[in-house]
Each structure stands twice: as C-alpha cells, then as structure tokens.
Amino acid sequence: MKLDEFTIGDVFETKSHKLTKEDIVRFAGEFDPQYMHLDEEKANQGRFNGIIASGIHTLAISFKLWVEDGRYGVDVIAGTKMNNIKFIKPVYPDDELHIIVEVIDKKALKNETGLLTVLLSTFNDNEEKVFEGDLTVLIKR
Image 1 (cartoon, one colour):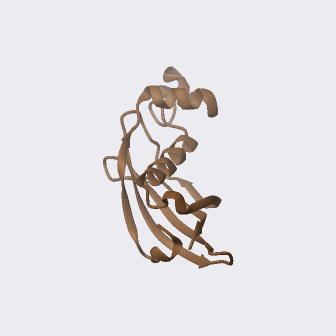
Image 2 (tube, rainbow, N blue to C red):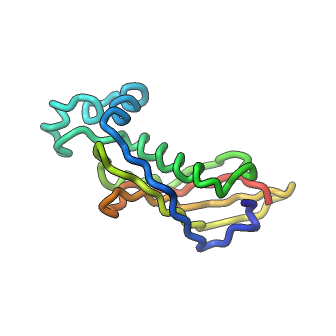
C-alpha cells in the first residue's frame, strides 16, 4: 500500500508466531547473551521464574509479523526511526505472539514519498500486551 492508501486510525491484526525455548536461546546466544535468556537454572531463581525472550527478540518478531502482513509491499523504501519502545511483560517459551498495528501519523514529502508512523502493540496468547513501539517508514505516495 502507498502512503495515500493509509488513513490515520486504520487498525490491522497480524498472524501469530509461537516462540520456542530453542528460538529464545538461539537468538540470545547470538544477540543478547544474558543469563535470563540462556541459563535455565539461574533464570529459574530470578524474578521471572524461567527463561524469557530478549526484548530485542520480541521487537524483531513484532517487526517481522508486520512486514509479513504485506501491507507495505514494494512501496516501502526504508525504516527511518523507532520511538517509545516499551518492553511491558516478559515473553516465555511457547508464548504465541500477534500484533495489532494502528496508523498514528502520516506526512507527505517531496518526490512522491511520505512518512508513515504505526504503533505496534504485541500481545501474547492470553491477550496481555508484552511490547509496544512506534515505527516510522519512508514510503511511496
């Protein structure tokens, strides 16, 4: 979709993604090697009572689900910023995540492009919000 096809207030829901313990450990081992993501024994003694996904992993899954929804298609040019990133609740192995996306701002620019900002709200299978953040992209008009 092009910028002009989006309306402020539009809401979209993505498909879901189930996160496994193996996914969490693999991602954390490469990108966020902290004990709460890797060491089950230590994680069981911590405040979350078990291994949890990295917030960066949750953000990446959220972005992936939105992109795979296909609404941007080939009209997106590039991401420009992310703001108001909030890791609200821990994400555990076997949580199934889905995203509610709301168009919160759009601005036409020169050269047949514009900026589109969406609010990504990620929920687990208990409908608890686990992540939230604004994403702005440069997109064709």
